[in-house]
Length: 234
Ligand code: ATP
Image (cartoon, rainbow, N blue to C red; front, side):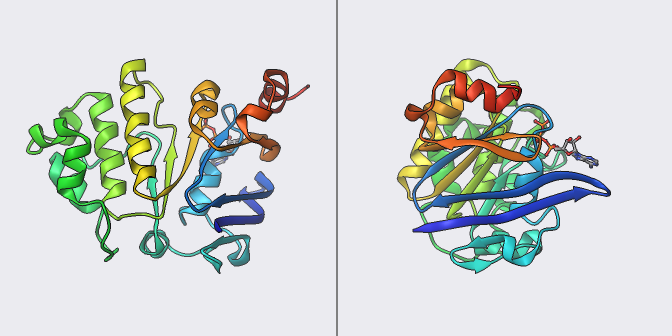
């Protein structure tokens, strides 16, 4: 069943058009990767889906209902959570307070609670009274991921979660995503790291200058096809 769909989604910054009619979908239980170079429109797409950018009402449907242009809190309450690029933790709050903010406004029972997040990332329990920004980059990413899980989302959006992290930490973060999928969530990852994206996803969408240039299952796509779709000119 289709959980999320976009239909001809466009986005503008003033006169500048950043997205040109994006059609994509995420099925229940699926992991989708959105890949593309700097400026391809990945963050704009995430912003539209999560209500941080304006969108036409019918251009985005979740669970069969239009959500385009709704406020971020309403979209979150329906079951879409974002791990934002750059993490955006609250610097004056400790780890636990940052996590607790994540379930504000969505009153559903599910697999994810403070205890469950601490089981997923035991280091966060040890550090729970520390300022979130005193943690390493990888640990901060765990807080951002844990905070998103606290709302028990049906769809988890992850914007560049491997950016700037050491390979061993990236492995841990992606292993956590496996555990999250095992609890039933669908996942959409936005990655500049193509290898990572192909390794974890059921399907990939390649974005270039605001358009989908390629989509398919990773095993069905050749390196050349991906390279042309990613960099253009192919
Ligand atoms: P990155 O990997 O650098 O985050 P991206 O694929 O997420 O890139 P977006 O950030 O969505 O791309 O940007 C898409 C296009 O919109 C780019 O051409 C960018 O310059 C432009 N853009 C993004 N934000 C703004 C803004 N606030 N004002 C004007 N143009 C913007």
